[in-house]
Amino acid sequence: MMSMSGSTDITLCLANTGSFSVDAVRVTAEENDDVSVMPESSFLGSLDAYSSQDVIFSVTPLATGGKNLTFIVWYKNGENEHSARVTVPLEISDILDVASVFYSLPTLVRQGETARVRLEVYNAKSTAISGVIVVPTSDVSVFPSQYFIGSMDPDDVFSASFDLETSALSLGNHNISFKVTFKQDEDYYETPSVSRSFSVVAADASSGQGVDIMVIAAGIIVVALAAFLFIIWYKRRRR
Image 1 (cartoon, rainbow, N blue to C red):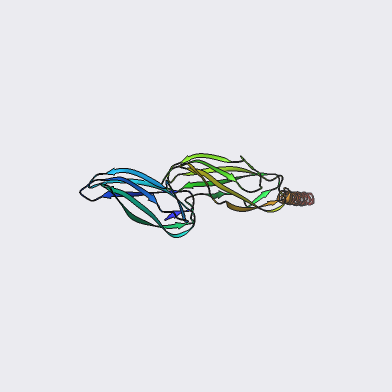
Image 2: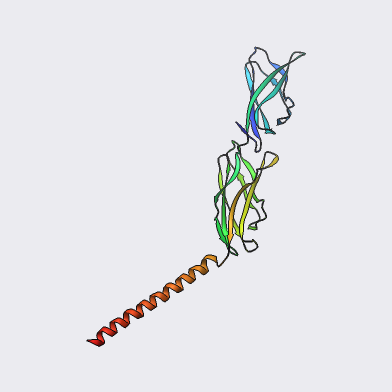
């Protein structure tokens, strides 16, 4: 299984099972519209009898689904050049192996207040990545403007926190979204944005109602206490 996010290394093991050495060994990736391969060709040179050597290609998927990637192995035995084809089946999925997920986000925020947004960023690749940055992709104002993580080893998980500013937002529902940019080998990649919704409510909507209820309750308590004291005073006076 190979993910659409970033590149994945493929290792080919070239084995010379003959009793003679071969020269001018090179491996070339056949042109393919579904995947990009780097380098396009790798030169190994000589390969002794009964020996093997690994060669690594970096594969970047361009489309999802079942694909076939073909390599051609060229070598010379004396003055004669020979070739052999090797086909590698690939299953390319749109499941991301580098991405961010929302860890916490308030569903209701009072207008003018600041709320904390927290994301978890994970690297499920088998290789390290660098230059990892979480970038907001919506019009909602957050601080900082981006969150720099840096390098992430395989299976690493890091937290990224932002302060959500609501003073300029209208009342109602809003969406906030983020993407992750990173570098793998010499290439830069970015993930699709993840989005979550929240609602901005009036600053005094709940607090004002709470104050009114407290005032009413206090008034009832005062009246009840005054009535209770009056009854006690009245009974004592009639004795």
